[in-house]
Length: 126
Image (cartoon, rainbow, N blue to C red; front, side, top):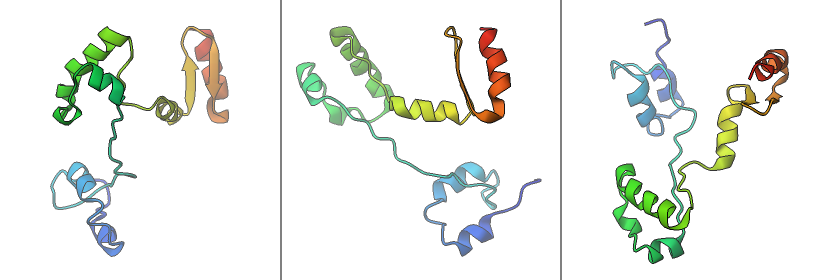
């Protein structure tokens, strides 16, 4: 494999415990680690207690994403409220990781300096 094994460095930095999940993902052979995630954040889901009570949804029963689908549809159907699992401000962060945001159909473009001309051309063509 053309990548450096990071196992020794991870051990020296005492990151074995914090990078176990990443090691499973980034170690195809399970013997060597070629990368670790920059963060292992937990997904947190917030809900409106009043809506769940009104619609008789038990939050403790929502133990998988699949079990969230039907209650989510019920909330949308009864209240027109969206159920999202992504903070809208985080979406902007994800888009900026691509170094440019082109908003389709608006001809509005928010590029980084590095890709300003490329983005402008792309937005004009939309």
